[in-house]
Image 1 (cartoon, rainbow, N blue to C red):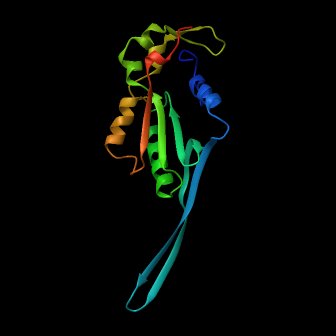
Image 2 (image 1 turned 135 degrees about the vertical axis):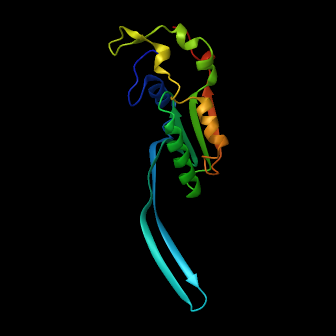
Image 3 (image 1 turned 90 degrees about the horizontal axis):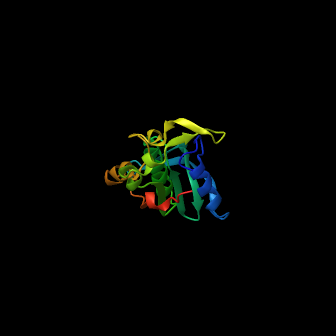
Length: 173
């Protein structure tokens, strides 16, 4: 799976998609309007305004009751910012109590795991010319990039469980 080409949903994410039970909703999106009231005592006055689409387009991969799950295997690391912002928006709207991000563990990069895999596979399954480890650059999603963002508070108060898949979790085939 690591050697196969990715795309919008790579083979690892597709496998996770198959493993997730049918009770999880997929690709949940939050949208909300903002209704504001400003009240003054003297003179008694209330101003109201509404901002449609105040929260819009914040999407998460999976939702089960009040738990959100995003899978980031080998995306650009800026997707963590998007995910954490979405978790924060869902949390502030009381739509979730917990966010979970599943990503590559540090051991995948810090060992020779990726180098031992050889070259990538082409879409037809034949051996490609590029080494697998080159697919996993410094600016791709992995635990150390996520932890930095969590320590900086980019989750906006939403509790987040960060799960990193270790190199040992992969079976030799």
